[in-house]
Length: 261
Image (cartoon, rainbow, N blue to C red; front, side, top):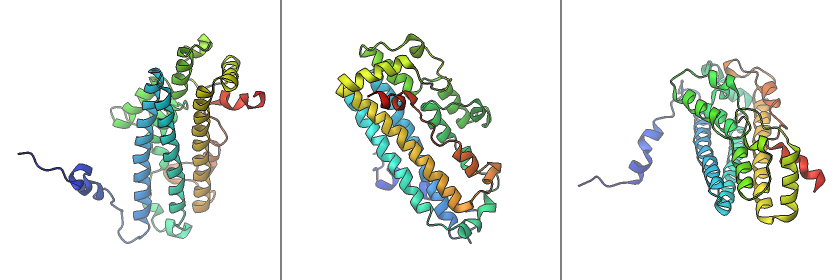
């Protein structure tokens, strides 16, 4: 007879609770720091899972479920931002009590956040090379390096819907940055004026873009509030680098058409 499934066994609670291991039990706030970042990694995993599903749904032409799944991602992004409020309850002096024990560890090394960037069109060979060959992180980023982005899935979906997406955009190098395109913008303007269902889908993508930018901004302010303009852990540039990531839209065409609607 098989063993009964319980809440603890199904969710592997014992294993989960054993993963929080401060390097020094003396410092009270280190536990908060670890839990917040572990939870972030779990949410990154879920967002990647959902965005991959959005791509699948778009390729299947299932617009309602794609929109529903994007709304789920947007709700998760709000949680990611809200978690920064919790982290900001830790004062700069409290963070300094254990910061040196982070050694070379840095959020800059989050391969899942890099994977999220890759799926949204921000790919970097340096990000791939930062991880050792044969590791889970390296394999994950290499796979996403070669894979179409969410924007590529959207363009393919619109072409399947009968819109004349320029051929060079449908066949573009998926490792290259997403650039604005006048032909795509003409299609999007037509959609916004005449196709309520697909204009709603486009608006969810704008929400996603804005949500990522909001998280980036709040992350910068949290870092500045905690360590000011100091260098980050692991030799990173801290808030100076993070500021360079602001105000860079993921889907430029969806922003550039605003003046023409």
